[in-house]
Length: 254
Figure 1: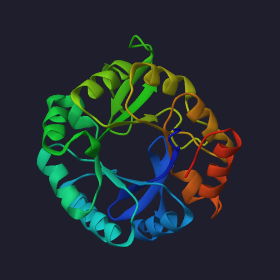
Figure 2: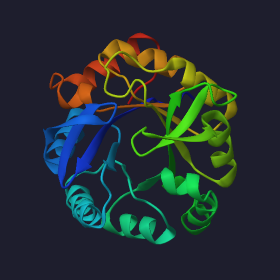
Figure 3: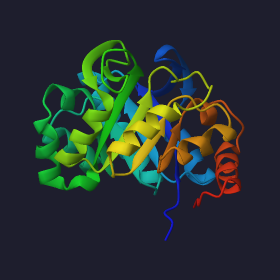
Figure 4: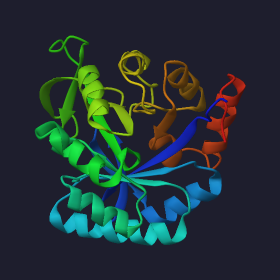
C-alpha cells in the first residue's frame, strides 16, 4: 500500500503573528495564525506546523495560547516547535492541543533529551527539526545550524539525522537554510542524502516557490512536503495545485 504524501503549510509565529522572510531574515507579516490555520484546514492541508521563531518566555506564553485556540478550531495534526527544551515543554504543548512537538537546538546541545521525551510520550510525538546548509565542514557537505541558520554547529546533518532516529524521533523535518524563502526549489541532494541514512518519515522544507517544485522533493525521498511563502502569498488554491502536481507525477496524495 502506497502511503499518501502529506502537504503541510508552515506558520512561523512571532509574538502571535505569522511572519515570513528569506533565509530567516527581513520578516514580513503574513496574518493571524488561527485564521490562517482555519483557511489551510478548509483548503485541504494534511497537517500544520507552527514554529515559534523567537521563543522567549513571553513569546512562548503567546504561543501556548495560539496553539490552544488553533486546536479548538482545526482538526488536522498540529506540530509545534521553537523553544522546546524538555519533557515538560512537550507535556505542556500536548496539553494545549498540539499533536507533535518539534525539537532542534536543545537536541544538538543535549541529545539525551530525545530519549527522555520519546520514553515519556512515544516516538510519534517528536519531530527532529534539522536546519542544515551546505558547507565544506562535514563529510556529507551538509552541516546542522541553529539560530535561524546563523550558527554553525560542526555537526554533519546526515549523521545527526541517523543518530536522532536511533534515539527515537518519529519524524525528521529537514529544512535547507540555503533555499529557505528563496522560492527556487527544494535541495533535492540534501533530501536524498538524509533519506539514504534514515527510515523514519522525512519532511522536506525550504525553497518551494511553485507546484512544480514539490514532486522532485518526493522523488528524492521525502514522505511529506512543507512550505510557507508559496501558501501564505500564493493563490488561494495553492494546496490543491500542489496536490495536483504531485498526483500528475504519480505520487499518491490525500
